[in-house]
Length: 182
Image (tube, rainbow, N blue to C red; front, side):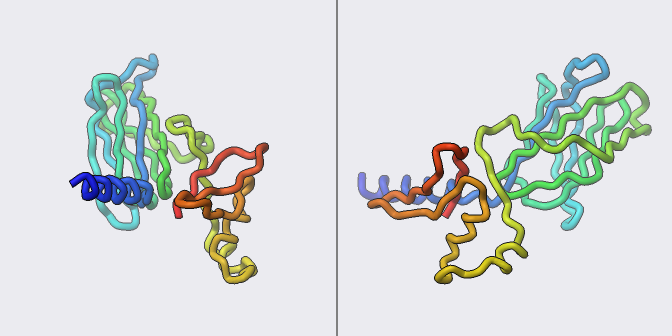
């Protein structure tokens, strides 16, 4: 029985490490920086046309986990405020993207569209990630046809080595650890 339980837990941990989705988080506030509970939040996948909805909690915060990667349009509405809209927000594998909304007072029929924003600074998680451009992978010389040479494109990362049962990645002391899921 304990052997089956151990195998089940090991399989679950391996499956958990293979992240194929991303997460949206955010905070909805009014002009005085007070939170807006109950705001209606809608994420529309631009390429697929699918829509995911949620509601801001009592603290004005929301979280939409397990979202497919892609480009989304975000709309946030609450009674007594103009509708907030951001037409393009990109979500990549394993990323947590923060979309905060500062609602302006007005009618719901009015909207505020945010077309530019500051570069995304991830403050919700402490890990770092790097997406490698597919063209860079195609153009990379195949050193011994080892797919792990792609890691050389990531600053501070090294080629994984097997030490017993665990896989490790050599990272220089001056670098920041980067999670790599084999």
